[in-house]
Length: 324
Ligand SMILES: [Fe+2]
Ligand SMILES: [Fe+2]
Image (cartoon, rainbow, N blue to C red; front, top):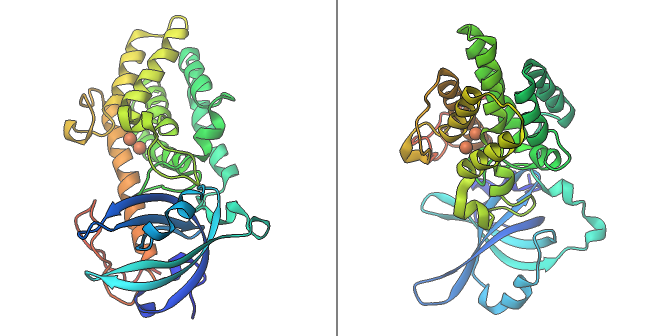
């Protein structure tokens, strides 16, 4: 066995050197205790994104700063271990010859398939019958200004849905989970329409909050304002352009967007004040949690241990026997 993709790396390869072509999507320069600067670098290929160490940053500063995120690089790196976790250290970096590299092959992508995701979105769009709510969705999701971003952006920097089409896949998951609850509990048609609209828009502003792949990380607007405010703000602006937008629908949809993190300490400025908003919050949490567990387990699939390491957002490790 050899390391062909980043996901192949596991503890069996400790102290081995490997070569790979990857994208360098983020770099954070830090200082060690003795004052020497080094870099934590996020590298990725289609299988995985991971943070690695580059101790020789200072000596190669000019060259590293000349690399753009769209530039593939060839690395030579060594697999090590630090505090029980795998730690990769880059030994050598050179620019890859872009004639031999297809950038799309180096970006992790949703495995749902874009056509079936578009069909899924249409299914829920058809359920929205009220013309004012339809107009809101038309302008924010399906317009030329936004659809490309909405359908390609990631939904997270790390943890869940941090891949090409991630926001669209996450939004569809939340739509499916929420719709199942809403129809099981026999919510009214109007409630279901509002639930669909607030769900489509709940993380919409991640198209502003996050940089477009292959870059990763927050934009300045995202860091300063966050997707909850940006989403509610943009939605309110668009609602104000739509004539005769129903006042209750406006308040309920905005409350749903603002409260979708469910708790004040998780960044929502208000709590869910309707059944729809509570369903959205719980469906959102389910989508994020389950995806983070599944992708975490998949990342550690090739390691021999019975349990994964601890997944910080869930506060526990996971039992790997019997996955397949
Ligand atoms: Fe969110
Ligand atoms: Fe979400």
